[in-house]
Length: 128
Image (cartoon, rainbow, N blue to C red; front, side, top):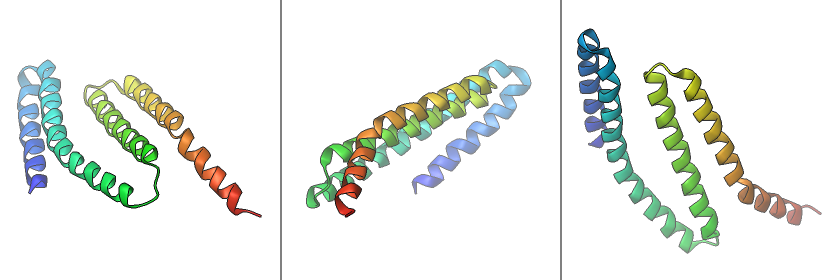
């Protein structure tokens, strides 16, 4: 069960952070970042399996493979953006976190334009 590993890493990191903040608060962010990277590594291993399944399903259907690649990239950007925002908020930099969040949203919007235009073209073809 990977969720037990993820929860375990999170709780151990939390205990270490609480203890470290009493003596050396500047090192707490390093523990938080390390735990985040470990958890992200566990999640990344699962993501590769999901991507393989999506590619397999896309090859069996009439879905444009370029759109699938684009959706995977958009999902990756969203996950990485959320990770960076969380790290910034944990270190007390909410202003930087909001800028990263805005940047991620703008990039996702710009990358989704081909999908939206294709969807609109399909809708226009269907309408009389």
